[in-house]
Length: 269
Image 1 (tube, one colour):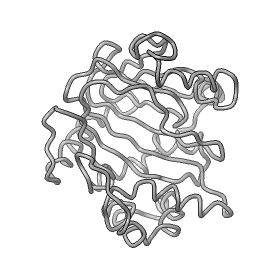
Image 2: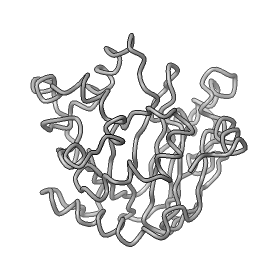
Image 3: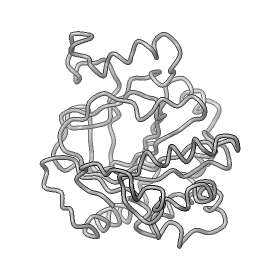
Image 4: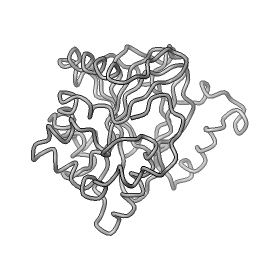
């Protein structure tokens, strides 16, 4: 799969793109595998707040295969280049609202999130909302739109009333968005299922210390390696292209993070 020039232009302009039904034929096993991950850990989702596991797809070999899938890898190659980096995954049971935010402000390279929702959602019950064009950090709109993170105080409107696009989904749809894009969710239930793949352009050789610093931002997730064992164990040569840079730069993740403080998250690995 390779994105068309029109799809690339859409993503460049608006910062997101939706692929309706892209994984519809696979959604049964994807959902089964999703549900199999959470019992592997002690924390149980009780609906009181978000439960998150990081890394997520790395826990199950079949979920790891999504990194190799021609449809997913084709999207990534089109947006990030043939040697894109797999930067990890998170799996979630969401509860309630998520306010307006960006996942980063990256200027040196493009970072994207590929998101799969396992429930039917629209704007009334927790679908992802995005502000088109808000990923463009340095134009006037990209600067001024930062106000939405405090929309009531800055703009006099509540978060759910910020003008935005709600990306309705059914299981099997795939959403892709730039980490710089403002996004949120409102009105959702206490049991919304979603997981992501985080990918980026390869770091230039002179930026490897920046890569290490980026990885250490996740130091509160205690584990032996930045990647999960199933991700590395099941990797063939094609997948290793997307793991090798992080693996080489941060193979001593456990040693680097052992003395750093942990955050009080609900689900830690």
